[in-house]
Length: 483
Image (cartoon, rainbow, N blue to C red; front, side):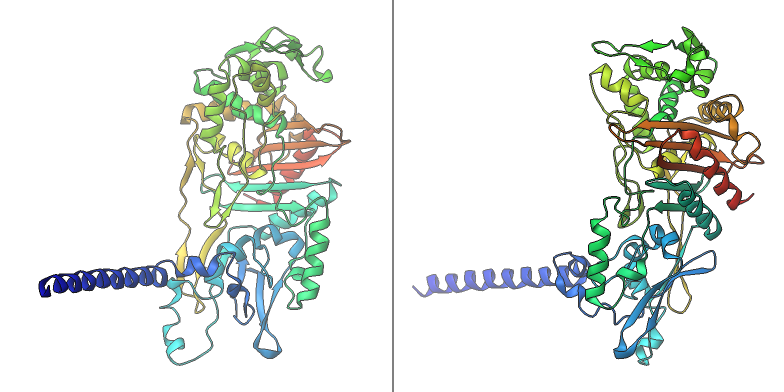
């Protein structure tokens, strides 16, 4: 009996010990490894308590302070934004209820809770001094950002966006969007005023809070022919390869033919076959519809799109990603043909299409786009510097050279020849019809300057007309970026 009781006591003791150890391990995990995730969970209301009692650090770009905090009565800090309608796609906002953009991606650096800042402010913390948050240095070029926003506004477009990338590094130099909003309106310390501002912005059918350069999808029109042409190059074509053209093309099993634009009648696109470089420069719908439907076909185009970064969000920074660009994977030639001329269910962000253009001037490599150049502690100590990395490598260096030739021909003799003499060296126009609407999605992607192309640009404007009308905006952005 005694032995039985002893064994029972020992078992109970062992089980209790295991439970205590498991509890301690769980507490250690929660407090040591998962505490920040729990604090940031959107269901945790405590993260919104006293969020304006912290002296958040500034967001700067090119030496210009874009966002900063000032102390008010009661120990609270008011967030301020410079030229916010211009820079809000970059900074985002920090309100009583939420945060977006760099305010969100670098939240714990800005509010001083990032573990990497502990050593930079250790002495101040020990002595009980005021400890401000860290700072963010963004990659955007303020002058080019202003030029882009001004040009987009002047276009009279319903919605518009522009992106410029440093093709060699992936640094986002321009990320403009319109209609825009003033982050000062939603970042007020007055909760009622903030709620009213959010209500008005959210009721706007054009969604000004949504960053159209990276967060919204549009049919890319003929700019997607760049991806289709790349699929052909990857399959062994060259700029000189003769490809199918003609006035109309009916995909297998389709009830309706895909035709070239009326303006192409009597031109090269009417011929039965022409060199790929001419089909691309003249933007022959029949050529690229055939390529997407039959040769090299849907699998090849979808694979090339994936190699450019389609089908998954582009992570700009941790916690800040783009919308997902897509091309239809299908066994129906008619859907693939329509998607291959940038219509149907093909959609893309301006950020993604700028990345596509960048491959032509960076040896076939697409650098990962990023917005944060440097993070610093409150004392100015460097915490993190950007390290450019590869997003994708869809083309070999030789193939990229062929693609560059194609894009330069567009400006030399093709649909963008009106840009001759500007800073745009090469590019591709695109016009996507919007069913039932009086406007089109007018695209231009390209690169410059002519003296040595380094910048890849994508511009979208929604208005009546054609893609070439977005070309001069790209030229203004490249001019602002300089050599």
